[in-house]
Amino acid sequence: MLTAGAFSASSLFNLSLAKGLSTANDAVEGYTPLEVAGDEDYWTVIQQAYTVDRNIINLNNGGVSPSPRIVQEAVERYNKMANEGPSYFMWRILDQGREPLRQKLAALAGCSAEEIAINRNSSEALITIIYGLDLEPGDEVLGTKQDYPNMINAWKQKALRNGIKYTQISFNFPIENDEEIVAAYEKAITPKTKVIHVTHMVNWLGQIMPVKKIARMAHAKGIEVICDGAHSFGLMDFKIPDLECDYFGTSLHKFLSAPIGSGMLYIKKDKIGKIWPLVCNDNPRGTDIRKFETLGTRSFPIEQGIGEALNFHNAIGPKRKEERIRYLKNYWANKVKDIPGVSLSTSLKPEYSCAICGVSIQGMTPQELDKQLFDKYKVHVVGITWENVSCVRVTPHVYTTLQDLDTFAGAIEEIAKSKKV
Image 1: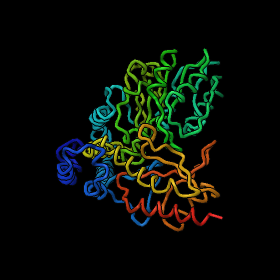
Image 2 (image 1 turned 45 degrees about the vertical axis):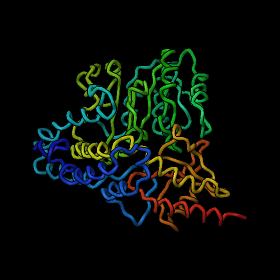
Image 3 (image 1 turned 180 degrees about the vertical axis):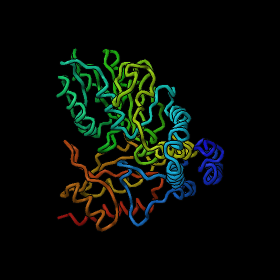
């Protein structure tokens, strides 16, 4: 049965997609990822691997991304297998596929497989760390008002329960100066600060934060760093250890296009023993990363479907994929940025943004713009009103076509013109 796994010769990727992608890759051999980013013939092959409904234009991939057909079929295959004899096929067959999957995820992350745990999403991964850290009453944690709400609420709950102090600074994005961002964190540090929580790519409007610089500053002061990589992993071409953070959590169902409800936790090897597992384990102070996976019965089909998503991602190439999605973001953003009444909330410089970009129209709330885009143009985005962020978040993916973005940009222009007094 294991010969039917994602990393075998009979994987769904090898059976149905490998040849076509190999031919497409051969056609762009010798071109840089930046050059390939605008090659529509190449990306048409990628687009055809998805089953998305072309009657709507989905530009909210920052929430959750669709999986390509092979990933969906893998989940269906494993689900059918599990139901043929659940306790046998789940525990004796599918459960054995976790170690090869751990190895492949670690290879993409650039770390040891002994530092990777597989779970359901970035919230679960990061809350494992937040609740698992031993912090004393009076210890301080530093985050921002622009972090993800689940993480903010987890820290607030820990503050209520354990008597720690949770401090939030605030940024006015976009910011095109790493030193300004690092300095803001550093200024808020006190002698009692034990942890800095930083979001790699701010989910509201796509600002890329200088995690490595923040981590170096923090470590020089004896402070640990937790990185929320929900939107960066599977999108940007980086290795987790290069960020120099101590802890990292991500959702694999965003830009990696893994099955919905899949995630990953990274903990530096020498930190594992100090973190309590979120769910009980027979050795909670042990140094085996697997102590964070004692979830009991889980969705083995979803877990094993991750492997096919990795096959697809690696066949495209991480850097090539990053540059294509940044190209798509810049394509529409440059079309609308000079339209009267239209404002962008995101830098267009490559070091400060990639996929996500915020846009607003004077005289409209984000929710009004969101509704009009869908009702009239069948463009699905998400209106954001959070702290000092007010925009519509727009996030393309590799299956997004230039025609989709032309429709969206044209809609923004039409709506903006209709709002002029």
